Image (tube, rainbow, N blue to C red; front, side):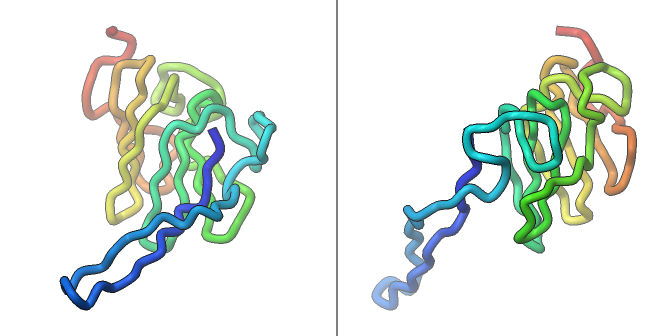
Length: 138
């Protein structure tokens, strides 16, 4: 899976007084390298979810690298903001992350599937806290 442009063309329809959304079909790769997988800061392995913050920074669940990557607006290099890049069940590791929610303070809520838990990572933290589920109980 390659992350494509999230550009949407917004046209205002004055007849119904509402915006009309149209998908921009000329998408480009904005994160990762087409045809390459890996764990370098510019590569992804099975990206599973994407979220944009208020500043258009892109957060990507890099599932097979057991991490959450943040791509600053207009950057092709990601920075790890959750997880260590190795799987595990300790507070600093993720195992099969699949979904991500981001609150207004840039805190993360991560569905850590293979650990059967939801992890809360406050902005800048090196460890998560389990807020739902019991680690390792499937």
